[in-house]
Length: 184
Image (cartoon, rainbow, N blue to C red; front, top):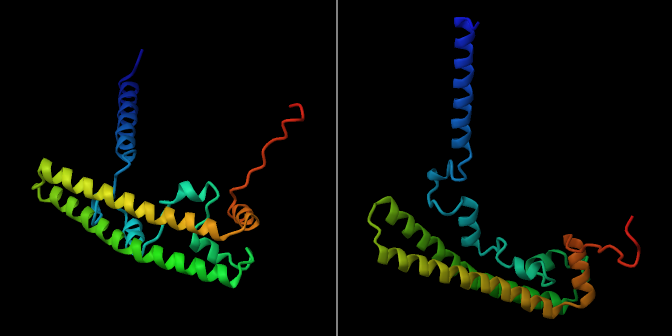
């Protein structure tokens, strides 16, 4: 026979489990806390990265497929044994990339700000939404192309040995298992 205290304890326990579950649901929202951002779609790091012309993973398709980026190669100039001519060429590639990326990044941040503001003020229309998101998509594509092109140009300057060392240095070289040996 259950006593009143036992019933109360079961109800209390059930209530605690329910509250924990509800609290967990709130904590699992991937956007929790982001509502305070100046531009909801971009973190402060993303905004500063776009404004500074940083790559932020935009050229990952090149980087992870043996097309090093000019900034990382210049940072490893001694280890990669770059010649004076290679350094000069890479500095030019990096400068050109920066001069193209910074205005695109600034325009992207401005368009994201405009999109955010349109939602904040409840004044967005379907047409404005289409136009802004299309422009943001164009800017993202152009910015990515700028960074990828710099990787393409960088690879053309390096020797196969330098690319191999770069990949090893960055941790991109994996050793494949020897297929000629039987598996244990």
